[in-house]
Length: 212
Length: 212
DNA sequence: CAATAATCATGACAAATGTCACCTTTTTTC
DNA sequence: GAAAAAAGGTGACATTTGTCATGATTATTG
Image (cartoon, rainbow over all chains, first blue to last red; front, side, top):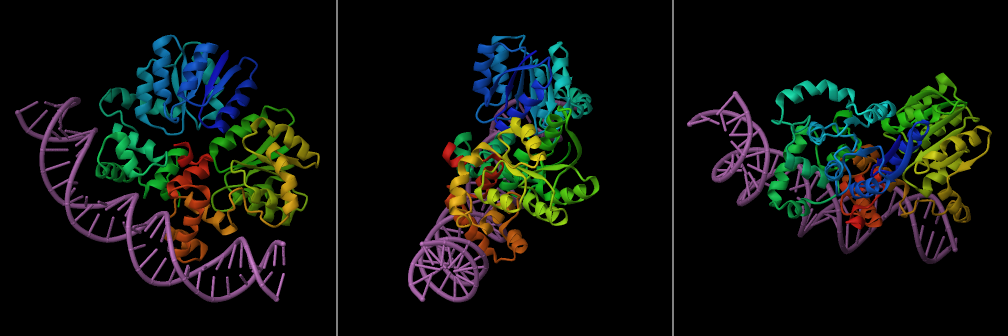
């Protein structure tokens, strides 16, 4: 099985490579750091399956997957993420991608890859638990465990890039006040105190206030 | 070889376990998430070697190592870190620990462990390059690539925990104004703009201002 | 159709943050 | 021993941030 690994964290992608290649059935044909890499490396290497992070700088894994599937509808893509966000799950499912795993379950990656290789869908345990309610609610409120909206999610990613409210407002074509309001409600929903904790949460997946 | 793995990031520690146990010579006897765990688990399991992250919540790997070595001078400890900080290298060397690796070089961990097990010191490539200049300057300016002082480093770790200036000042027994001054100089040294970028830098090792 | 949710906006206000200038006391280093 | 660096501090100031109340518009859903 020839695998393409995409993750913007070099630590994660290199450790994935090591873990995967410990299995004789698996060969990591290339490693990329972003959505652009994913598209290019898929074209040039034609791997059997792509193992890709959802959240990455600039182009998200979902966006990259859309483009890859547009060029090859049979592409098999397995997503990884720290941020257990329902919105992404639905998006990934809609893409017709081969499944969705959480990063937390690192040791289940190889069996999941093999299952996906056979054309079967794979979901992490947390996902399976949520699936019924997700399907029942269908499109409706597919906006994450924390009830975050589309725009709020976008805002978070910019906070996690270290941008100021003003900068975010310019990028998102909003007033600075709106950005402030968005962040205020995000913080309330996530039970965080300030943007720094939000950035930490984004990357670490933990809420500092709860642990302290 | 019986190994104890300590890392506050569950993703890292679980993937380390997977990587290490792929080798028939290695057995991971326990996993811990912080310095306290390290001390307790070392006592109860008496592993041949400890593989430990340097930067962790509350107690750093260095502090934990000090305590472990105090109780067992023959303890073998291999450090991991993302933050390639000279200050830590010197501290680790001074401890008489068995070496120092950077997280970046994930695939070199097993050979490094085996080398350390034999009682030999191990250093990552980046360290070897720096070693001469470090030794030449001896104690002098062992304060990191960015010229950060001891207290500044401490302050950074608290910012990365999502604490406010006031909270940091209470923990460090300083006035809030001093904490603000520290952070101000840290930001200047690291060419960052605010504490959120600092937290991002701490975890990602990149400076948002430079990349944007 | 009515209710709800999402999106976007203002203005006002308090609190937190970051900067600056300036100062003292120890340690370290040359 | 003088100079420099580290550690700690104060007060003032501008800016940023986060909160709140309140309101408008547009989709969406029951």
